[in-house]
Length: 112
Length: 113
View 1: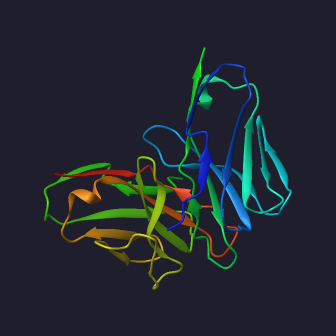
View 2: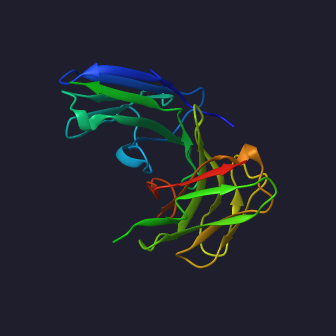
């Protein structure tokens, strides 16, 4: 089965820095989602994107649905310690009844 | 409002033993899912149930069976556990159809020795 390519796999950043991560696929998706997973918990939805070119924000988080429909980007501004976790992208093709394909994850660690 | 509840949280099995992972949701969602999460692999769909009374295979169904007991509950059974099934298992639910985000439980960490 296909997995989405996420990069970077992990990153260390200092508190206050901005963070960028991306997700690419060889296939077209009609929905892109970004999830965050804290240790010992399940993924929690951060942002949902439904239209090519769409740019959506949720507080300090901004995500974009790539114009080719094969990629998506997540930015976190002014990172804080609670941003630590694993960030997953997920794509959904048309007519697949919520069956998602997940990326391999980006592990974010923030140093003070 | 508990959301999606999974039991147990941890389990150790010996090769060949069987067990059932339980999942219940209280959000009146139509669709329910079982995923497994392995290091470096992201989340992979095992089985899903688009609505009460239906189940379908996902990406990695071999070695598993599921039962959609009612609208709230969706269980995952390992009939004869194997070390390759050591993983973290997540149950999720959503409303029906496209563009319905998944809500996840907190996972069951299973080790098969």
